[in-house]
Amino acid sequence: MAILLWLFMPDYPSTNENLNYLKMLWSILVMMFKYPVLVQAQIVSFCTSATFTAFWTTLTFLLANPPYEYSPLVIGLFAFIGITSMCLGPLYARFVTDKFVPIFSVLMGELMCLVGVVFSTYTGRFTVAGPIIQAFLGDLGMLTAQIANRSSIFSIEPKARNRVNTAFMLATFCGQLTGTAVGNHLYARGGWIASGSCSVGFIVFAIMVCFMRGPYNPGWFGWKGGWQLKKKDPKCADGVTVEKPVYGQKDQTDEEKAIQRAATEPPATRSGDSSINVDAISKEILVESGTKIQDFGADKLAHQGVSVRLRGKEMG
Image (cartoon, rainbow, N blue to C red; front, side, top):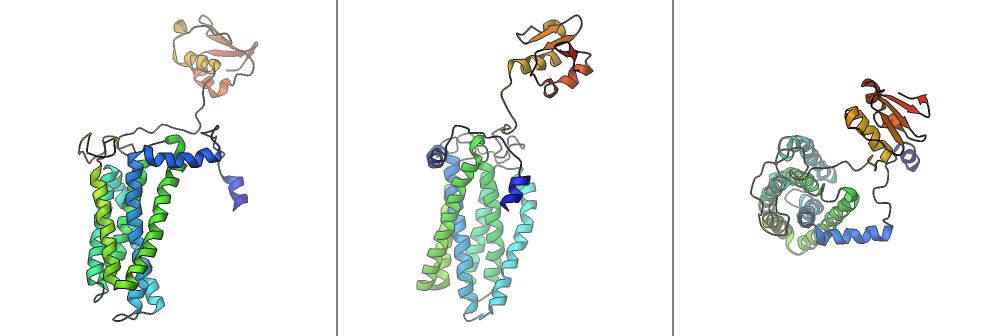
């Protein structure tokens, strides 16, 4: 795998050249106190992940005991229910997540989880329909909430998206560990209803966190900026922030800027440069050696009838 990655993975330029590993780890902690939208997404993801693992780790105990007494094979087949919800995820993302602000999709996902958890918790001991409904709605709700949460944090720091994702996934993994431990402990002490009721509490708390901060509020609490649920800019991940390209961008030299001006401005408006001499009459640009004009408008210059010369040698 390492050899394949080395051979085929694109060689992207570094976006943070002066950042060492220790500073990088420290910056992840700083983010948790700097960006309210990240903290909101972390808390919601923690609670949702906790209910997910609490359900799947205790489901085996429920189905293996009376009144069901299913075999391990039959219990394992319940995992295919989650595949159905995964197939619906892209459709939901296209028709809902892409058109509405992320917090709306998060709320819809949490409501799906809540319906599934409540129904399963209080009917699961005497009908298998309860766990089936939670397996479907719980997976679909968590999937939609996770996708929307990632959309909301995508633009907060363009040059540190891996670190932002690390902070987000840290909360997700902690939620999964908590759900596994708490769910099993409560099931051992109080059974299926005790474990499920804890999951209900997790989801209710996540919904409360969603309502504590609006989609356009830059602060920690409140709904400053309005209640509009449809994205103000459909092309933006969070509906507000315009993403700018990070990779493949570099600072232009004076020579490169002068060549771009020559390709876009009339000859009469172009000024001379220490390394580029623009002749307005002959439409000729004299460039010093070492300038890579082929990357900065040479084709466009040639199309406009502008000749580019390097020490007397015509280049375009």
